[in-house]
Amino acid sequence: MSLAPSAAAPSHATAAAHVTGVAYGAGTGALWGLVFLAPELVRDFSPLLLTIGRYLCFGLIAAAIIAPRWRSLVGGIPRQRWLSLCWLALTGNTLYYILLSSAVQSGGIAMTSLVIGFLPVAVTVIGSREQGAVPLRRLLPSLLFCVLGAICIGGQALGNGALRPWGEQWMGLACAVGALASWTAFAVGNTRCLAQLKQLSSHDWNLLLGLVTGLQGLLLIPLALALGTGDHDVGAWARFGAVSAGVAVLASILGNLFWNRMSRLLPLTLMGQMILFETLFALIYGLLWEQRLPTLLEILALSCVVLGVLSCLAAHRRPVAAAH
Image 1 (cartoon, rainbow, N blue to C red):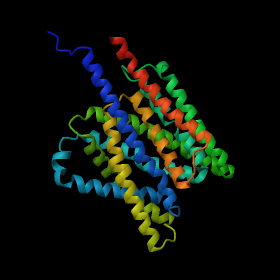
Image 2: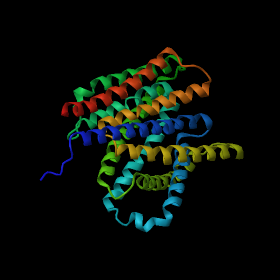
Image 3: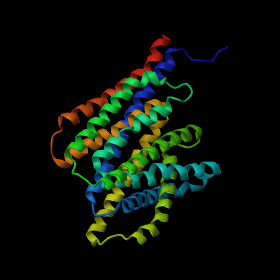
Image 4: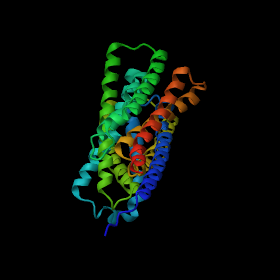
């Protein structure tokens, strides 16, 4: 006797999971977009110091939360998963944030936004190779909107950006491409790890990731001291600490929690589109920071973000309609 549910049941369940997943994706973007404000609030601090400050706070908060149940939490985690945590912490947090901050400082927000804007495209293309994934040809409209949106955002920033030496531009481009590759590897690897770790909640996995990232931040302190921390007064360090703690709580704790929950609700091809919400909210926060209205290119970019997500949702719903 078959125990499979009727066709309508999984359809509704899948649709509800997709809606919830998109909501988590929007929340993630709203929180992660705040990261772009941090360098503006503490401009006198280097990308390395920003990375250390953010992830030391993340690690300390994570350690405090999981300390009471440490033994029960880590008892069933195999050694291979700890190696995965180290790799994911490096690619998705430490290395990515250093490269992203360096790209902004060397090449400007313009070029960095254009390159990082292709994150959804990279993740979606990789996800389309997964077994049972929506074919890439069905995702072409969504990918086209992603590319157009990234070009609009980057074109707007390029039009307003100051001229920089070619050496700095190429260095910034290299860092941006490195950040793109680093976070793409994290997004794919993190999703696969979560799928294999049914005994761990998304929140606990994020806390363990934060703990490992905090340890990586500790290892970077000698390098930061060797390179010099700059001449800052007590007020500047206090502001740096407050910004680091705020980004750790909002972006690393809550933002990553939302992302991990979304990763268990959406397929990889659809999950990639959710990264565009970070670009969307980063642009909104930037407009609020600069106290101005969006330009025509920025409005077009926002439209492409919305259309890209909607067309991707439509591509994932089409097999459901065919089943009826």
